[in-house]
View 1 (cartoon, rainbow, N blue to C red):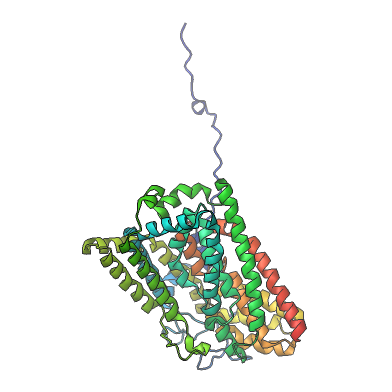
View 2: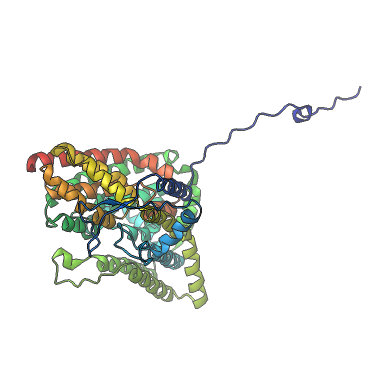
Length: 508
């Protein structure tokens, strides 16, 4: 009896059921390009307009006027926007790079080079084994008290945020902090949250931050100290909420690693950030490695000292260096070489290790340029001032409590479009502050509403280079971060709005 040949169902014309493709959330690059396309489209529909600007780059109230449209081209201008964002925004009249045209910003090339220098610096430091040895010693010393590292580090970053608006500088810390929390049994998301929420909440509640509170107060015509008591209270309450939120998640992950939002990347992250647990345990903390760790820490201390405008804070006895990204890039280049020499690296090993470290952060450097491209399109399309004028008109006829809360809400989309707190203060405060007089609201509360909204949005917006850069370093997808942080964002928003309302009632 002949056996019957079995014919596959596809041969008979019947089709096998197709497996459904699981939805994959797009990367930060795709999201940012999508936003650029949307903003490009808006330049064809939103009326073009400009304020008149004084010599300091401040818009003059009641000078908004419409101008002929300058709609951006979908292929040419959209594709060029990230490239132009690297160089800086241009004055359309002169073609020259400027920082005083509708809140224009410096190019992001300085930030990108800083990121690459940090990558090389970290690569050389990691190559010496000093970080592995230091983390191993720290974990052993903390023992069962490892969870205390989270609030301690978050408070440190909050101080940096509230005093001088620590933001792009935090990109240098992610690799180290993530390695530390992984060694303590937490996950990479916990490390990202420690840095991003610590510095971000500090910036949200800026007390003496000259780049947000200082500029905004100056344009509002009030002293920097006005409203500082309220901002300190917001810092304490929001800081406590942020620490509680991160520790709550970290303890959940510690007890049950499968509860981690990035559980599928656990092995990959440990391999990348820790090399291997076995190596970490076997790397001794020698005297040479202690010196390398001291140099490592000294580089960051110099960075923090050099960017704080001590004279603006009234501390004239302390020299103000006024360094920014070019100087900071040179600082980390120098310390990379010094650490390599202390670690007895050959010239070939030192240079190749530096290049490999920079390569690890190349994606971060590129995403900074893409994020800056959105501002390029808005400014070249002449719609930034139009959006600002709309916000001013919408807020002009409200009483005190609704007014201050609507100012806070209005600043959320404005901060999305202009992620730079100093740039946002420059272009909006001369318009917003005078409106407070009609609503019988102190101008200092408008400053607080501005910085709180800007800081809150910059905890999650993909238009802020620090968010997409920090997540890229930590290998945390943007949608995963949103899932983690959005409930906290809601809590922080309620805290700020309640505090603003209470302050209006007390001071009004």
